[in-house]
Image 1 (cartoon, one colour):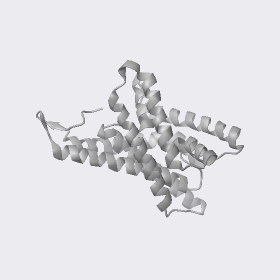
Image 2: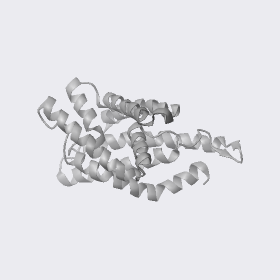
Image 3: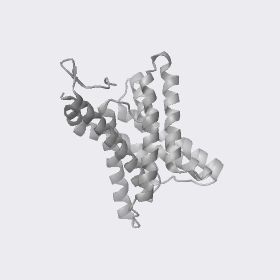
Image 4: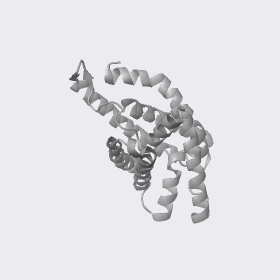
Length: 226
C-alpha cells in the first residue's frame, strides 16, 4: 500500500491526494454496482457474494448487510495470515466493507435491469463482469486499502508469489464450493447459485488481469503523476 498522502518532491500534493481518494470512492461504488448487476442477470449471483446471498436467504436480512459482514471476516483472516506483519491500516477495509454493503442495498433497490431473455441475461452478466473488474482495478491501483476480499487475495498472492488475478480465480472458486455446500445443507436448494456464479468464479480474475493491463498505468499516472 502507498502512503495515504500523495507527495511530490517531499511535499504533499493535495490536488492529487483528493483526486486519489475520489477515484478510490468511485471504485467502491462501481464494485457495488457490479455486484448488483451480476445478481440482476437472473443467471445466479456473483461468486464472491453467493455466500452472503445464502445467509441473506436464511436470515431475511439484506444482501448488503451480509456483504459487509463477510467482508469484515476477510479482514480477520488477513490478520491471522500476517500476524506480526499485520498493518493496522488494513483495518480501514472495515470502512470500505460498510460502504460497499450500503451501496449494494442502494443499487439493489434502484436497479432498473430485469432481463428476461437469455441473450439479454448473458449480455447483462458479461457487462457485470467488466464493471466489477474495472472497479477492482480502480480500487487496488489507488493503493489506499483494497476491498476486504481482494485485500485477502493480495496477501495470499504476495505470500505465494503468484499473480493477483490467478489467485483470485482459485479464491472465488473455493468460495463458491463452500457457499453451495452450505446452501444445500441448510436451505436444501441451490440458493443463488447459477451460471453467473460459475463464470464469475472462473473468469473474473482474467477480466481483472485485462483491466489492470489497460487501465492501471493510466490510473497511476492520473493519481500519482507516475
